[in-house]
Length: 179
Ligand code: MN
Image (cartoon, rainbow, N blue to C red; front, side):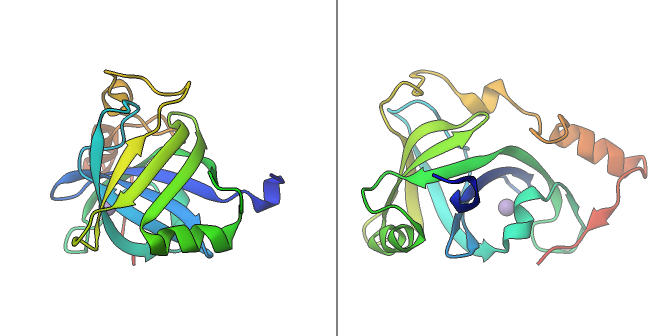
């Protein structure tokens, strides 16, 4: 796939009132987003709840910092993984991704630093906003392994959630309001 056509994905670790990982896929010019309370897994026997949340602009994919108190999602956000992805479908491209999204089953190959290989996102019956994220069985699968426990840093700055909180406390990092 040519570089310019490669859709991006990002996973942002977000310590809001509850810790979660925001999994975002570029589809139709926006970042389609799911909040995964326990984070993604490379273990194909693990099904992770992924709650569909609001779309974000593409520019948000690189956001890292601390969302100001009193705003939605207040707390630190770091870029836990980023890269590009492709649909695991013969008819590749944005149109087929949108169709897969509507149909409630997306199969993608992620090319990230920490998340690689095939993943399935499937919408649960009768629960429109609740999906499951499942690692497919391929060479990138790591049974029994928890990748969110292996890595707690940002792939863009190497900082942890605690580093961001400490920087705000020390006055060396501004807070932002988003959305
Ligand atoms: Mn979030």
